[in-house]
Length: 437
Image 1: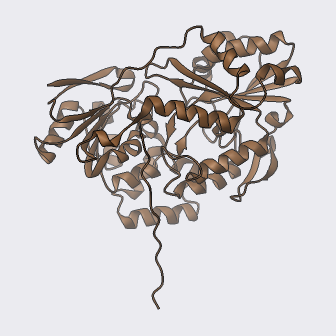
Image 2: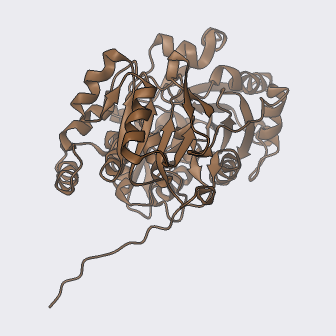
Image 3: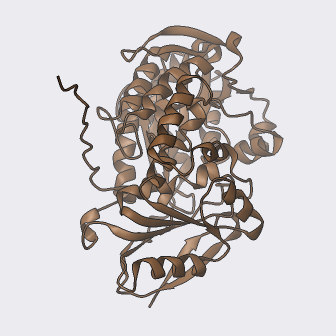
């Protein structure tokens, strides 16, 4: 027997005994520890960019500097990464402000700001603003992308002489986060975000796909150039949220380079699986995944690893409840008619694409695969609302799968399934219906 350890959000870790002959893929692999001398490594990355001028060179010609950071929905520890950058800017005698790239999510509250920035930065007197996409007066139009997306970005970004985005690279439901995502949706207007998110319905605008297949990401990259973001610093973390990679430079190039590094740690080869696909995948959730709207993401990631008709077991206490995922209840079970109705509701404005992107890819997977959620007893009723089977024991969930697939089932362990991608992305062929005369 093999004992697997499944992260269970803020509640710790669950343990499960799995017969060694069933466990055909285990992604619980060793990761590097944190980079030594982190402050020094941050400044070195900025001055040894993968593309474009060094930060020191850019800083010399600037008077007003703006730093974009991600919001509460991303785990980037700004309180650890920003201090050496802020000191360098201050030592150079430059003016600096911080702008939180909120997209269309709510503002961070005081506790969340303290968790993100730490007391020292909050008490430093450095202005910290939060982008509020619906407040149209704070945004300025800068052009239209080749995909037809009108780009309006926050005025504070445009008023700065030097702009730097500080964020993390991770797999997301629409490709990979970080870099240009700090512009779109980060500091873009409501209208710009919705125009861009219409592209999410393309099958390759999905987890693990990059340009040119990922049109949504291409649109984001164009918006980044139109907005004039000077450079980005991207961090990659191990599952303990220790910085293991840093990449800086012109944003598009830095993001592509960071994604390449990310895949070295989090991409796994489907050819390791006998038969090419699993019957069952088991995954957990991060302490920061307080909402099921974020801890549900592994369902989309593991779609590539689990055969149609298979099961994905997701362990998450989800103390904050379903959040945006609650909108999925109107389209469950996800029959072809329900999916058609979802697209219709999007067209008529009954569902906004910016939040549909958090659950729409998941219910499209649930149309072909099953999911069982392992959660706290007090949360079980939430999952009845969205018609996802939920139990309060990992052992019960595993027993259900064993009953369905038998003693020879192929099982994969994905403790951090939210960040996992295939080593080679599957080719998606497009078909069209042609009129027969």
